[in-house]
Image (cartoon, rainbow, N blue to C red; front, side, top):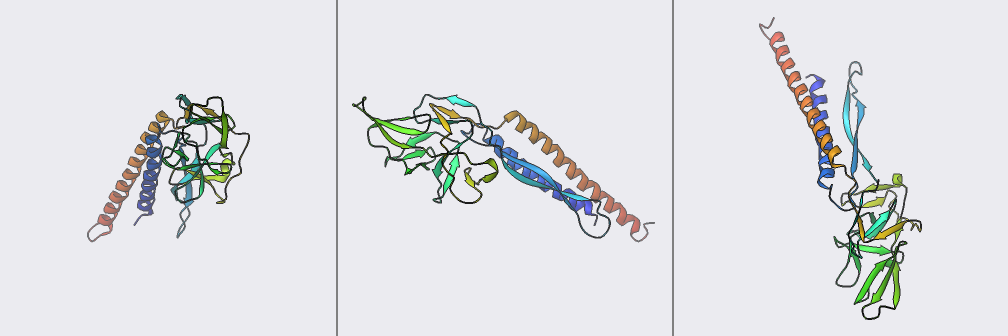
Length: 247
C-alpha cells in the first residue's frame, strides 16, 4: 500500500490535535489569568526501503504564551493582578507548589486565603490565615494587611504573598492549568514582582487569531482527507490494471 495513505492519515491526526489545542485556547478567551497554549508542527523523516523522499508532519505542544493579558479594574479588595512578569503561588490539589496568574482570591470558612477554585494561596511563610472580622488590603509588594472592623486606626501585617518570577524556559503548564518548575522544585520568591489591587488580568488569548487558526486547520484537514481519497483511488486503478484481464 502506498505510504501516502499513512502520511496523510498521520497529518490529519496531528491537525486534529492542534485543533483541540486551539479550541481549548478559544474556550478560555474570557478566563481570568489564562495563558494560551502554543503548538507547532515538526518534521519527522520516514525511514525504510527506498529514497528518503517523504516525511511525517507531527504536532508538538511547545508550551504556553506567558505574555500579559489586559488588566481589568474590579474595585474588589481581593482581586489582585500582577504587573508585568511574575506569578502567584498556590498549593495544588496534590499538595505540590504551583503557580498561576489568576488573582481572584477569597477567604475560606476556616480563614485561609484561597483562590476562587478553592486552592490555598501561599505566602512567603506558608498559607495565609485571615483573622475573623478583618478587612483585607494587599500592597504593591504583596504584603497582606488587615484592619479589625471597629478599629479602623489599627493596621496589622498578616503576611506577604509569595510572588515568583522563574525563567519562562524553566516552567511548564500542567493539565490543571497551573504552572510548575520543570525541576519539580519550588521557585524562589522574587521581591521585584509587584501587584495591583482591585483589578484582574484577563486571558491573553487573541480570539480573532484563534478563529483564523481554526479555519486554516480545518482547511488543512480537508486537504489531508482529499489526499487519502486520491491515494485510495490510485490504488483501486492500480489493482484494476495489474489484476487479471487488466491490461
